[in-house]
Image (cartoon, rainbow, N blue to C red; front, side, top):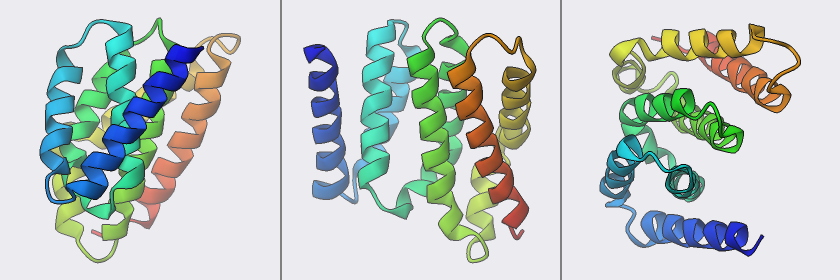
Length: 165
């Protein structure tokens, strides 16, 4: 149990340091975390990286939206590869919501930013397809993930519906 609190404390401190102390540099910090996350195979390291990303996104302002297009593919891949670790999958879904929330500030004001971040690699289609697959799979399995996926999908669809290109 102490490991859980210790990991949260470290992630929170790194997030605060990156977002508050170095507000013009956190993009580079996130990119380093993403590179490590993309190659990580140990579930505990993946968990730590996801916690750090969540903390940074909680602390930083909406400028973090500029790297949504780089973050979403990595987070989606981690989600797909973490089939045995449901807590990491939940963290991935939380990060996706945070990213879409950060990007929503540009709705109606900066359509180029939204297009640049969501059009690459057909991210919208990948996200919605993956979420649909999870929801229609065996109803007795992964209830918490399905519940959270429905929330994410509704948030995602609501954002896309209100999007003004």
